[in-house]
Image 1 (cartoon, rainbow, N blue to C red):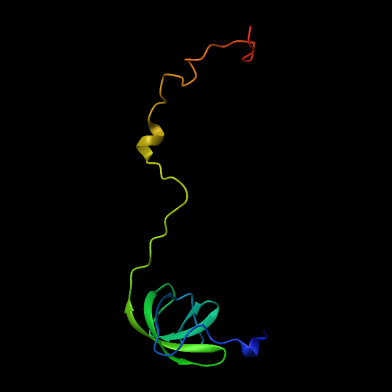
Image 2: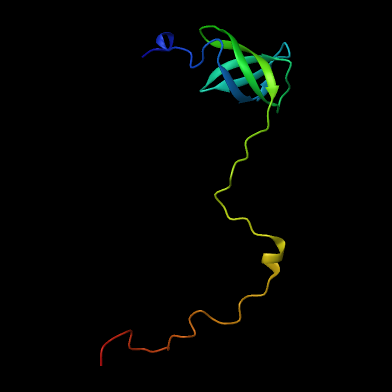
Length: 109
C-alpha cells in the first residue's frame, strides 16, 4: 500500500486524549495519533488535553481543545524502594544456614 492510499487514522468529530509534543510556527500545538499530525489551537508544549477532531486533510488534521485532562500515570516495571528500606539492616540469619556444607555434592553413600 503506498502512502497516497493510506487513510487518516482519525475522523472529524472523534475525540482523543493527546500530549502536545511541540508548537508549530503559527503557535498551534502539535500532537500525533498513530503518526498522524494534528494541529491544536490554544495549547502549549507539554499540555495533555482532550481534543475533538474538526478537519482531516490528506496528511494532517486539525482539532480543538475540549478540556485539559490529567496525564495517565505510567507504572514502572521496576520495584520502588523507600529510603527506610534501603537503610534497614540486613537480616542476620543466613537463608542457607540450615544446610550442611559437604563435599559429596548429594552423592549417595
